[in-house]
Image (cartoon, rainbow, N blue to C red; front, side):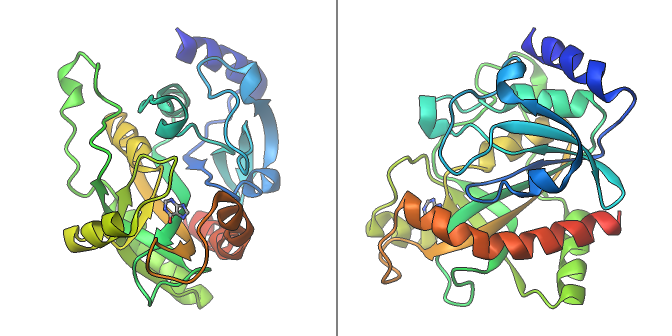
Length: 265
Ligand code: HPA
């Protein structure tokens, strides 16, 4: 099995290091992987990890220390839109859980619906809307597939992040994230519909990972780096280039937030 084969490669190099928190880094947010001192695994060395990928992502796993905490950082993710596979991050997350991690921290780039959460800001995800209609658990044959998603975004981890943000002077509003399949961006009519449904931001990732995370018993939290106002709500032309150019604005704040979160854990 890919998970076991990957674990064998990883364990042979990390010895008894046991990551506590796993991070999945979104578009343009991958530099945090370089701040971790530890073992670096190219996804191509591992089994069942996403190959190829999307520009702006760093396809490597780093396991090591950050702010005195053992972490596992996934510098890149597979998206549903790449191959139409909703559980493309299942093996990496199974590996994370098998290594002993108990927490999953997901980041993404997203388009905002709210004027009070403008590009450059972060949004703490309080809940999600699965607008894609896909689940990474389709095909899972056990009763474990019936995952409860109430408080999927762990209230304690969110409260800790809010505290860290306050202490650091970071404005961190909470909101609902909608998963849109991509890879095309949304139409303005879809954004108006999602707004009526209760979403505050939209993106093309995170939701399947959090579903898998909860399936595997990981406590999850997620933060969006807002790179643009969603389609029809702003003046900028939305593009992947624009997302990658804007993500570093949020990345600095995100690193501050993550470091503070780890220091308090
Ligand atoms: N829509 C979907 N995904 C995104 C966006 C957006 O507006 N911005 C960054 N990722």
